[in-house]
Length: 304
Image (cartoon, rainbow, N blue to C red; front, top):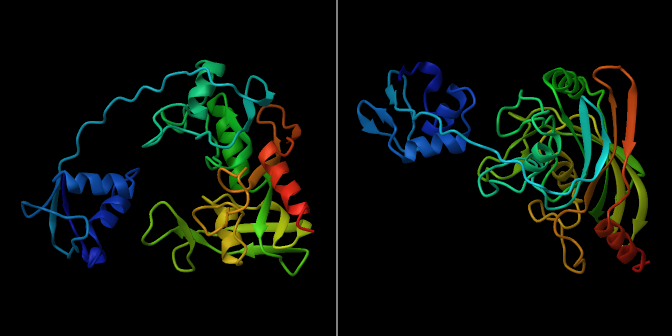
């Protein structure tokens, strides 16, 4: 593939340009192409941080895709709701949602394939069958998956119009002054750490989190958080932006010392409300706080 660059590309890094120009290509995948010498400028291999200029002619040698087979695995699932169209699972801490580098199997997708057979939607591709939305590996709680494309499209629309209600509980560091509030700060990929997200007023996507104080402890606050949007790491980024990171969050500054029961952030997807994609019925589901969360609250209560 040959690409001739226009004036709008002046000064862009090679990896940034490729990720934006090729639909579905992540920045890490673009960097891999560059590292393998598969992107040439006037016949010479580009580096990922090379700057591009108008009139540059790039030659891309993109390899054929490698077939990926995701195998069903018998992994226990806490099924909260299931019918012919959707399944809702209470995900434990530590379970990755779908295969990714470093986690080729042992994921929620592997478990769903075993539990549901071939009855999962295909809209998100082979790596993410049935997955409508995600929650982080070290976040526990409710996640919904679609068993067919009709259900997937309907649930995706509810995510887009904010009618799919998701409520979390969290313990954050410090004490918030108000009893409730709203964080409306745009979120984008961190400019230097690709594993993190960050508030970015220039290129961030709108993100809104509503929070309410459930209990106060010396140095910590138990919150209910309602998502109006669903950006990656949204609650974690927004709470850190307020100066109150989620307890145990190793990425956004939440301390963990003194809480040995925490494997990650103290964040649990507690309630979920959606319109059934086939019947239109409003379904509300909830799950109890897991043992690790209850242990944190007990430890916090001892501080009073």
